[in-house]
Length: 449
Figure 1 (cartoon, rainbow, N blue to C red):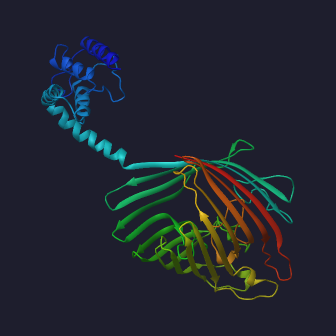
Figure 2 (figure 1 turned 60 degrees about the vertical axis):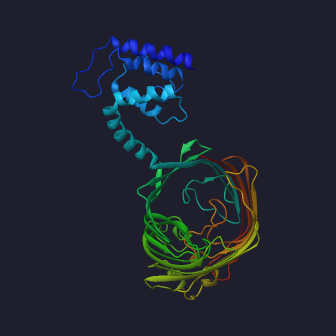
Figure 3 (figure 1 turned 90 degrees about the vertical axis):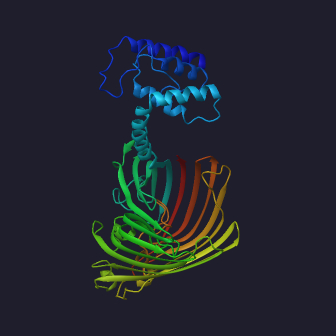
């Protein structure tokens, strides 16, 4: 490589000698062809100290300016363990280009700071889901990103996802977060939607106090996400160390949860006001617990149950215990206390939700060969959950009850496979009407970057 660099550098310098020299008023004027710096830089290149434009090359078709020379010197100055001859030559070059280095230091430092302030990660994901349900399925178009096939008893999802998640360093206390998602249907090879920014919030950390403002991800910690795991547009503050308290307020849109699919005749495009308070201990503790209360406007939401008030309230609780470092048991419960009995409606089928889950180990995308398995029984009353973390797109969802088992495995670094199977029933909200059988097989392969 060194043998190639020196001739290339010489060619670049020779080519620049044939070009007009910039006016002396330009602080980044061309280096004269007979300047001693040419020989000095060529020698440092031969010694592997100078690295050209940063990509290991010298662009012989371009002239070399004092600014470009200073860039090479600046990069070389970061090298360690130089011999005395190379260090002396580099010091001499630094003195020669001191003005340019001063300007370069300001400009490059600012640029690198901005670049380093944004950290990107994301994923490319493929899903195949097969669902079976007794009775008619939801008509096509009622649930986004679902491919319906084989009449009324079976539907498939065959989908690709591309997702970007930037994190922005604002200062020592604040960061910015966002998520951009894009879906494509694998059967039709058509775009399901345009790219959507579904997360966007600023987050501040002051000791044990955390502040979030914007369209923030809200996972109800007290009940392990049984009540909600979805964005809220508003603000949230969490304080405490071993015992934490979280206060959240903002607006929520029911276009994700079961209430948004017409189970109560709710206008899915309507946003509601939400306030919530939770208290819980450190989630890394061997024994975990939590209590929470969720309050939201509900005009028209529960009319079918005889409730016509302007708001609704849901109490939540959760308990968890690590039997061993790799085996854990958790349970959570939520109850809507604002609903009333009404003739013809089965309030008891909708006003509460619970989950009992046993977990063994867990797969990490960074740990090839790692795996995890779980088994759970869940009852997801639709009036006691907004958008539960246990909702699996195309799988179990609000309004279902039954068993769910699953496993995950990391095939190679950043390549994770997941499979889940649900078998249970769709809850009937009409008195005297039987619940309907329902099952689903969910598979997913995710590539993280």
